[in-house]
Length: 155
Image (cartoon, rainbow, N blue to C red; front, top):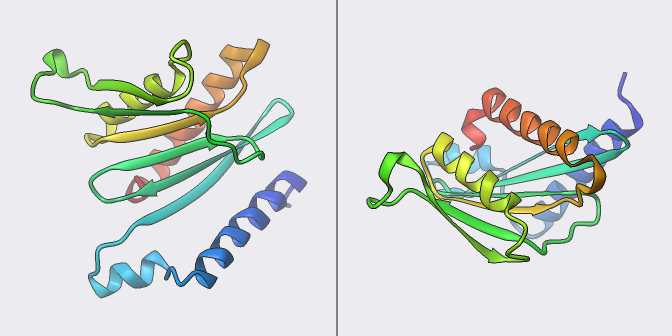
């Protein structure tokens, strides 16, 4: 039986798909079958303590944009990570594009994902972790890696 949170996630995802359809964006499955290059979208969520966090993956084929946030839909943080020929020990280069330079959560996520996915990754991490810093981050990261394992084609 679906919980209220699950129903809200389904309603949000359905709304995004309806808006995409109205804007003339076809289903990625249909485009993939036709052999066209596609931009694929994938949404999922998780509940941590009393807050629902949302993830939206935009897969450009050779790079990924990942937005993580709550229901506010804000984007006030963005980092990018990529492997370069100058990287020793296989560590990707990361940089903050938007947001506070004192907060390196998006850079950390981008670096880990670049290393795992072997492609450039942009991460917008819009979560106020507050006092429950460790619990929230661990649960968000665990849910993200779980989704990568379950749906590798989306990443």
